[in-house]
Image 1 (tube, helix red, strand yellow):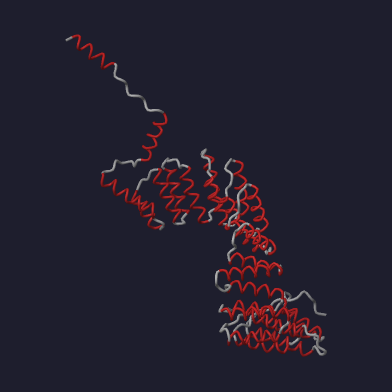
Image 2 (cartoon, one colour):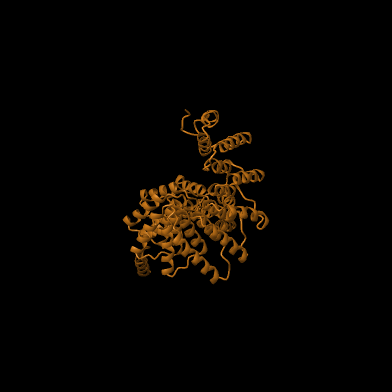
Length: 472
């Protein structure tokens, strides 16, 4: 009996003891403990919580997200992250940052994933200052921002047009060992676009190629818009040529942007080539060129004063079934005004209502009167002014165009012109139309030529804002 007890004691003493959990396992257990709700849930409560969390994961409505967060009550780290992602989908960075602050107030440490969710929310609303502050907080907590962290911050800067900050982030990425990718550069290109920084956009494209990153359609699209906003038509045309050479097909919108830059900058040779590309693209797709493209081309023709080309474009639009709108007619009248093509301007004014059913605005009437001035037809300008007044389009600029057509004509007897200018001035005052410096100077010029200093003293010189000239 004693022998049996001794054997049993020896066996019990030889049983292996439970091993202590490794440190990594203890950390995981602590994390799991932190992830669990404070109270132990019943099966029914647990199922209900899972349902709420599933709804939170799918929702993109700010009010619904706030309701779900309220019903969930106390959240753990993972659930806080889910709520921040949800607010990001709802484009509500303020609520996302409030959830981040709620974590801090409970002593829960945000993770890199949590910060990335908050940065994503900032990116969607352009909250660039908050995004930069989040990156600084990550570094302060010894969390290394990831590529996605920097890209979200760059997107926030891009949406806000803070191209300088976007470029600084690109530089920082290289220094911390997170080299920028195509998404990073495209974000910086969008920032350059919003800031109208064409040269910066071209430099970013060069940096991409130097790093072995091939620019894509989005890259070129942002660069084109940046160059258009900085009125660099030649660079826009060069970018289109580069896209084609690299096997990328520019869209009609991109071609129109480039054409618009050429119109503003006077790059008419490049504009002709871009118009040919637009025609080829439309033919390949079996459709006519769009009205926006025609309007931009008419703007370019107006800049050059090519009224014949403008009228031909209007005829082409009609033949192709493309509607002629007020913008197209205004640009065609602008071409007539620059060239002094009075008869063509009159014809367009007649066709605007009869053929196109378009009501023209003050810019169109002003261009028509400028054609009168260029053609040396002051009486025609006064007649058109009466029509503009009847149409309700007689603004300061319209009166000014009529005034210039009358005041600056080389007449043998300038007295009638001075009288007409003074009458127009009185009519403007009676109709409540404000004066500007150009109108004042036109009246001064007409009265000076007629040696009518008494009128000069009584009218424009009474207001020093109209002219710096002094009456004798």
